[in-house]
Length: 209
Image (cartoon, rainbow, N blue to C red; front, side, top):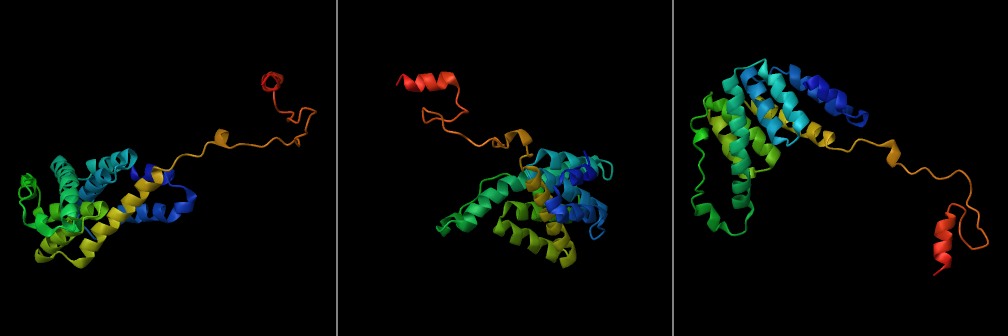
């Protein structure tokens, strides 16, 4: 599975998504490590097996295994944090903001790769998962590390493209057999007030009632 394979599965009504996938693969706004780590983290966050496999495979030949592992860790830890901190942010009761989270998240301080890259992946996954508090927190860290607005935008743009592809690939494949084709012959009433399409057995059963 590759990005080209994903593109081939995108229906024609969503050709913009297909083109965006192509532009994402050739975009040079981010460093290779940032981009391919982003592929892995967002592929996992998309919750679509085809998208995940394609993007992990795309990254496997471009970056070290340590980068892929760190990107997987980013998706994993954000899967936890985004749920918790989205609740804290959205809950009307603000007491939860002062309570300790009591969640282990050591990987954020020691991700095994450049912390800026890890923050970028975390921001992109947070955008997919819709956690405003996490988005603000990771964006603030990135800006303080002098990461450009263009790089941050690119990360979120990639996340949006990946999520769109994942959504499309969840659509059911049309099945011609599932379409009901009406009989070309007009229905004709018989003396019993029933239609010709009914079997004699069905008619006799109804008559016995």
